[in-house]
Length: 138
Image (cartoon, rainbow, N blue to C red; front, side, top):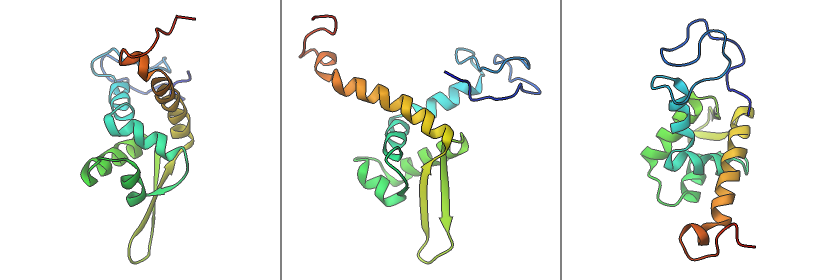
């Protein structure tokens, strides 16, 4: 999988990639890759990315489609994903306010990977919960 970084860093965060590396080191304590991984794989981050794969959504539409998410958590999740460059927020200067969210090209790539994991989980939920045949049984 290609790295998020396209150019060497001027100065790498301590414990992360050095200036000649193009990849982060997610196992290093201070690497920013960990924060991005946390945002993408959070309880609501995964679901937001999968929902936005279907196209542009307004805040209320997203909230209704993600059963159980509070306004505060959805807002925080969208802000984190936007700061990571995965989600684009478009505000229209109208009354009442109209804001739409969609995936950036980088977000589309991340969402495809997350969606593949979600799909795998859904296909294997019986086995995961102990109610189905083992995956290697043919």
